[in-house]
Length: 102
Image (cartoon, rainbow, N blue to C red; front, top):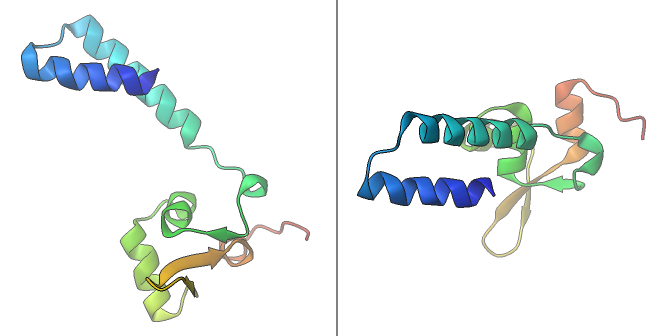
């Protein structure tokens, strides 16, 4: 629903200004969506994580994750012919100081 509201708001921004009530509603809806999506459970994550997933967990930029990989601070596994990076969940949890007890 928030995606629809955001899309409608962006269309509406182009054609006419938003009222204060509409702006407030959109901001509240978007912030609630962000708060919900910001919670990450380590148990629900796959064993291999993408750059974006690692960046979200560590709350840093994806570019920072790539830089750490180049410096050897965060070893990456390269997959497929494009060389996409994946990171082991165990390494990330160790970096966070979390013991999953596995």
